Length: 178
Image (tube, rainbow, N blue to C red; front, side, top):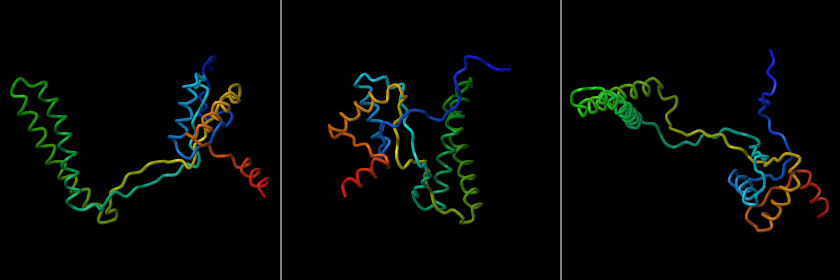
């Protein structure tokens, strides 16, 4: 069974590269500039290249930190449960709320301690993980690419955003400079 008229589900971007930028913010600024110039930005795509996972170490994980984090997350969960119970109780809703917070904090403290003890010193640090790209390409549908490049050339002349040169243009430039 086939479905006709359905849009393609292929997530791979298509089009010509109209600019390559060091940061996402610069690529975003380029598309924003195109929008300001009344360019049909629905024909553009920002693509991150050479993705890599970066883990930023934020500190040492100690018993105190593990217990505090468990207590805090348990208290938040308990607050949520207490609010739900408080909404549906005919008695004192504040007592239901406080009971939820206290019980949540207690169980969070216990489970935070248990999970830290279970790690047995294999991972004694806290961290944040992010996926970042080395460069960002702005692609444009073939039909609009020349117009988009002309607009971005004006932006580069203003000195606000400087696109990186593609490798083949960089090689041509260094050969002519010699």
